[in-house]
Image (cartoon, rainbow over all chains, first blue to last red; front, side):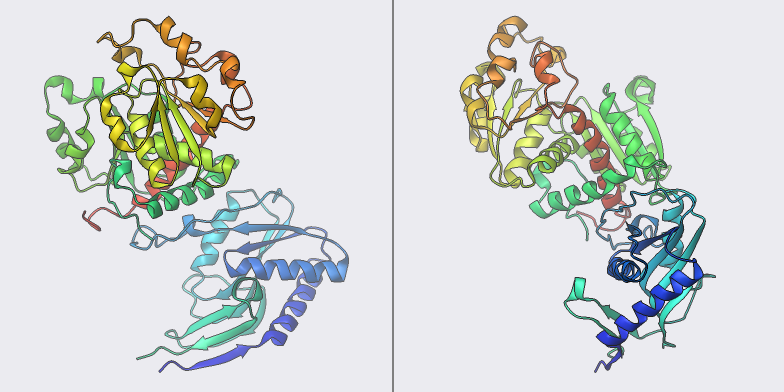
Length: 180
Length: 311
């Protein structure tokens, strides 16, 4: 049987987002030059929450974008799977911005590689930083996060699921064992 | 998610869920053509062969741009430059091209059924880019995308297709696809250009554009195919225009939000007047833009189908 345990509850997710918002502002000396870009699907909700929090702290609404990285994946050609393509929405200029890429879980790093490639097709930002709710290790590429909600050393066979209100109706991060 | 078909030969073979998937995917692809760098790496290392045995500017360019925006290598072969002029058969040509390992073949041919025949001799997915007066599925799909972008929903709309229905592969592909999507179709034109077989397709047949135009959401004006009018089915172009040219006088009878589409190329003043063509109702250039997105979607969805899903 699969064993599920809760890694973060709603309150802990909310605290992590608050802390990350402060860290982003501290590192970038305010919200003046930053923009948040969420990776579909749950990175988008995360980026919107960070944006709200930053607005609360600095009274400034920062630019916001959405990336669908499907077309940049490195496993498409292998694939019988054909993920549905959603729209990418980046309607501001990236030049001279510090872009905070947001995703729910950092695992192999391949999604982030794809996201960086996609981003570069839109322009040349000053810097790209990475914010994730969970870092579960097992990187296959030289990629590291700048802002982390929680580090969770995991068994590679385990599955981490992030549930967010906007998509799933509740806030919770769970880890699932593999049913053998 | 996969399409239910390996080849895109006919809209008759496409289920409602296939068409929705193609339209949704194309909708997301539209954005790529508006970027400064109009390219994504999705089909890097894939080879697409455009095999055009019949002249075409719009469709061939559209398929070529679609492939290139997805980073595929696109090779164009036209009828006059292919070995078919040396007597090589269509099937031999296809087999030889297949031996060079393309990933998708796009075929236009003057004979109905040529792409379907060819698909039986190659492993690569085949897209029919127009075969005789049979079918032109990617055109029908881009027409649906254009209509859906304006109306939001396809189900329940009423569309009139006006002109040379007999010779029109666009009409045939559209009728089938539109019926699958729940659109009510009327065909309008002079009796010699509407063969009796259309009565059995479940469409309304009319010879009076002035009446039909009052009750439709969309009017699709077809090109009078001058190259296919040698049998004398029309007494004269002027007579045709008197009854079936879409003019502002006829448009006055239509609903205020009527949409006008035309697969191009346009014979100005024959099937549509200049002012109507350039009115706010006309979506002719939107169709061309949407055509690239539709063909990108077809390439994306057929990618990897080789050796995968025989049907």
